[in-house]
Image (cartoon, rainbow, N blue to C red; front, top):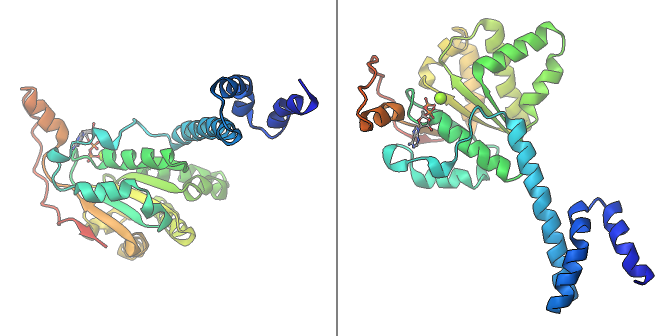
Length: 268
Ligand code: ADP
Ligand code: MG
């Protein structure tokens, strides 16, 4: 082995190309046996490095996101939810909305697939190499409220403002108290300012959002103004998917009061 050959391994290690370093010997043997060109050999080594790094990034992104459960777009049965236009979902899956700083809002009654689609788009975003953070609105309010009382609001706020995508689930199930409503407003306003996308799910149509924001219509409309300035709003309708599954399995459905008809899907 001459001096130059001996330098290859420490050179790759010094540059932090650990996967390429690990595979150097076997790749060199493969290349010799297959009579590869220099370019092919280098390409093979670098592709191995790139793909290992990407896998690591995705695994970290998925861990950081704190999804309550993993859902994928491929698991979403579009036939069971005709109000989710598959072309629109496919377009969102490209992640273009992230570079356009566009928000996505899923509205509709319980069980129609809002959280499923929000998580699935979040998983796609993580797989595209981006940081995502998932939270229910009550968890967001609780954590920010606690941080505020402990004088570390600025630091906690970073969790919500820095990721490429923030998913806020279950807006509207509970009315927030004034201090918490103001914290949710701050998150929406700060993400708007930095151009970071939000995916939000809610069971409440927008005209009932004053109730979400502690009965404050001015704060609700200021929040909606920012949220909907550039947004794709998808209104899901129909029966709860869980109920449909129960029906299919021959189990009696659980009786609930009927939900109000939702407005049609709109794109803003
Ligand atoms: P929501 O957030 O609207 O209350 P979820 O997204 O939590 O509803 O859906 C309830 C359950 O039903 C989840 O387990 C979800 O994966 C499943 N589900 C809902 N809609 C569909 C669908 N169209 N295809 C496949 N699974 C669905
Ligand atoms: Mg949900």
